[in-house]
Image (cartoon, rainbow, N blue to C red; front, top):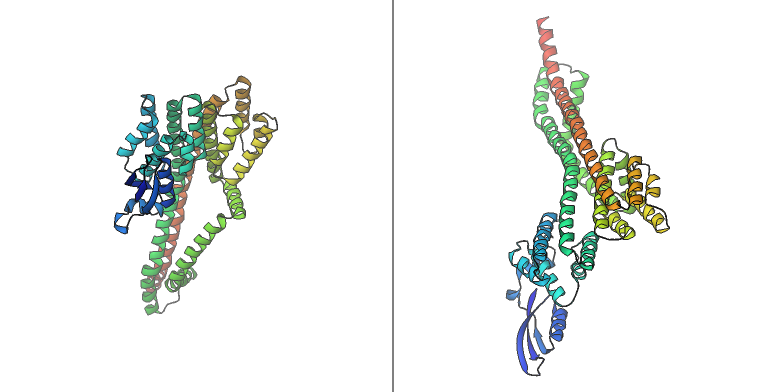
Length: 407
């Protein structure tokens, strides 16, 4: 927010001067009109009066708040709402203690918008930092007069969602780090260690075995073209990222990820666990099934799964039960579809999807553990084999020479 100095006439028709905080000149005029003032002159802040933090936020130089900060904000707000503190006052209290600059400004803007007559969910939409799930749950909480309970549910949901994401990322992160470290070690051997042996073997003038010659040629290639290889990898990685960002590339990438052994299970179960958990939270908050499905589809990362769930929603809108189209999805377990059917028949669909999310989360844990157990020894064997081949290839001519000398 910037401070604009103004001169003009106040609501009583008297000459007045003052300061108004606004995002820009247009908003400053709007705020003054809302106060009944008629500004004749409005002076924007000089360079030395600009709030540096606000300036950096406006230009995206400060990253937005993450899930951790959001959960803390929700917890604080739920406590205050439950204690009967008016919502605007609750926002003002949180604003004073908030450390993250982007969230601090967002809370201040929420307090301002709500005090001007907007509902909480309308104020959150205008900020642009809150997901469709977040806004819809707050809307349901306001309509039902159970905002404090909804806030608690939302915090619990985000915590469990974050836990799922960490599990999947953790399973993928470890092997990637080990592979990168292993690649650097192999590169170091090829570029710095092998050339020492090559010089020594050239001095002896003896003929080298095929495996040794292969390693020597590979070492020479790395020595001459390492910078080019790094450039190719960087350009290739960026090109792949851009390609995945296109509709066609995203579809191919998502389909490929689903078909990979072990990793495919990780992707499918992770997305279905997230979908089930979100749907359970939405339904328990009193949101309709079709609206809940619409929001839940946005929480799914994989485009193929997302398209399948959109078809499910379309069929539900046509009058089908939820269990029927879910049974048509090949990767959706039959037992889970049967649980959905029971939930629909008993009217406990929200509770049933809570149980289903727990099933998927347990299976996800098992898949992550199995993947880790499989990948760790596999990486060690592959990297160990490469290093062993390099060392054997370099020492083999020396052993051969020593054997020939004894003869």
